[in-house]
Length: 105
Length: 334
Image (cartoon, rainbow over all chains, first blue to last red; front, side):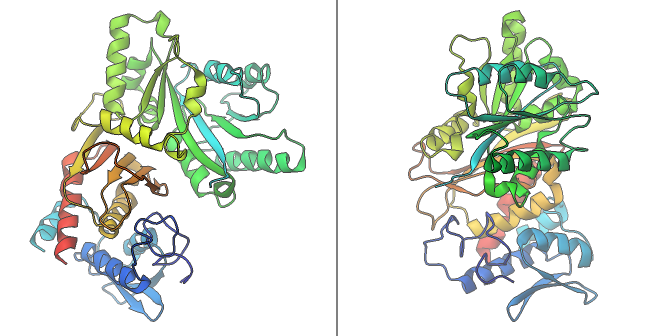
């Protein structure tokens, strides 16, 4: 985890708002902790059917699968790639079952 | 200020006039200082000889295609040009044009330019320019997936040989291209007003032209969901969101979409109303790659709704619409 870069780490990403001078809403007074927690919550919203969960472990972000397998992640794209490896099923934001459940959330 | 050298990708199907256009571009006033990298397919390449007649600093990648077998050659060729200019073994240059083979898929080449650890600090992708033959373009779009993908990904479409084409067929081709890729600027290579240098005007990459570029997108993206009988089953559609867009939720959704379906999301261009941003945000990308957002000081028109244009292949536009709106609503409730 690189504390100098994006909220999830790695280099500045197009999604990053904090720690990225070109980020959207960079000057809006967001804190790194609040943005990080918001992103974790939203990733877990997308993961609700996968039985995987993104959790904070100290300064690290870890993806934990249903069998207890874990993987440290450092960017959003890395999260989705890790989900393919540790989750019960891959994430597909166009899956109609997921869309039905999101509508009920 | 971005000091990286602009790189223009010149693509187009076999025989569509890429090299002719490149020669014309290089002879325009003020085009000295253009480095050229040409990819030819075949044992005896001749395109580079045609270009060398007008431009001494051309590098040729031969016997393969840079979108697949010659990816590392592309990286190395560009690095050699950059290193050579520093070492004095290659003429100094202010811009670079990369001409692909007629069968190349431009998307992997874009990814190379954006992701290569060294190149991304030296070069910035300016525009993808695609040539389309007025005589044969319509047929190629129907039968050759490569041709459709080139046209779908382009920022600038140049119809060549228009003086040879039947006016009705030409009008149909123009309309077809406008439906396939509504936000691209369309040029007629034979028009008196056509100046090849216009292809190098960067649009989003230039602070002086970025607003006009977005205005062009918005003017041409007001149609909804067009399906085509193209070889590649590509459709374009626009999505409008009246409420402000939660940037974090949008980022989570789009990265998950591109992870799963990036190969089939050929282009995304959007103007977003994000509540805590100082002005509208412009987003654009090719397949898995999303470029750094561009900030505008003012809205391009009176309409402050967010508008996103997708060009997709074998993806149901209604599913994308439902997924994005559903995720944004669920995120807001959380």
